[in-house]
Length: 158
Image (cartoon, rainbow, N blue to C red; front, side):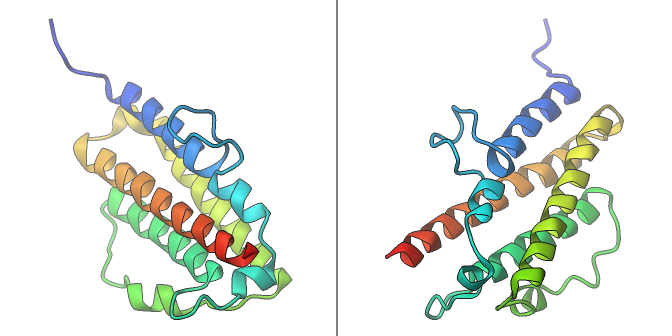
């Protein structure tokens, strides 16, 4: 008897985790309903996303960074050239946004996320650990920034 799990089954588990992180909490991974990244960001105005957080990055900067990270990990997943990656620029490129820029940022994040979700459909063709490691990084990193943004919202409400 083999203890191996088909890569498509692992991809289904990752799909569930990505949905919990980005789209909607179904439980039991994340406990509080209505706290996914897209649900959280829908409650934030451009003004609040741009609001100063002391020496910390704004919510808009976190969203820009998260989108950038998703793209970089997508490129890494498919072994594309990463020589142009500039993490410093990713953090400093966006700080304040107006309503149109905020809407465009959210749409860009959604499109990037949707593209990554689409890659799960091709999991049967993956080599294995490299792709899975990239997706695990996407989940962990995105969940971290979701937590940061939710903590920043607490400060905004105070």
